[in-house]
Length: 270
Image 1 (cartoon, rainbow, N blue to C red):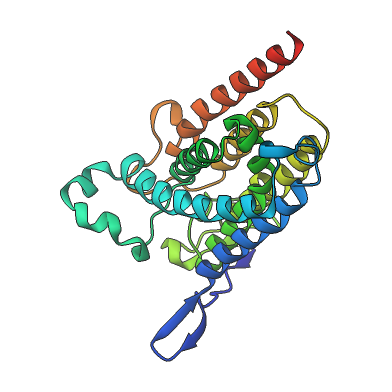
Image 2 (tube, rainbow, N blue to C red):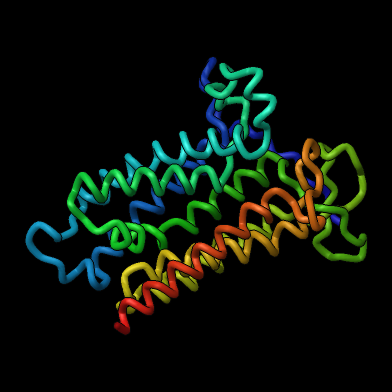
């Protein structure tokens, strides 16, 4: 049985300025996105587009900047609306206090979709072509975020058998019983594994919309599985059908992804 190593969340202290590991994982996530997105320019159909439809590094840079805004705004609003709507309705000014924590992946996803819709419209590019470009570059950022969760000692897992070799005690949880290190499960599933599968899938020409649909289904399924090992939020607990809020948010995501993929496939065959 392992014990959480109590990692200092502050990576570097420069006088009154504290640089947190969690903030650095966001920088890593954005850096990985830029690196992978520039590689996506070599994949079809982006490599062969010419004229006004052509893609460039400038598009990647602008997309990254707009996407960051979508992640931050959407992630914060999603957390407030999905997880604590009553609290933030009574304390609206605290919505802006992002340094206190509280971000939602599903909210961040909606924020990125809105940002990419604006980008596509402003650049005259097909929306689903933009989303297919972005999707394979996202999972490594999710992986970086889960490492940040682990370093912070937050979002720990449910109770595990002491016989599990990697069962871990998280003192911050208020219990000295072993738990699943669910942050690492999510790092492996919705981060690394999803990246490998989606990157390989997207390397070959696909019908427009198929890569986006595959991302939604893949993330939704992996997150749904990981939630069985992750401790539900204490202020919510398990909801209907003994499912967590994270699982319920994944259900429409999986359905939407399957529908998008099916429609894209049907259009390609027509």
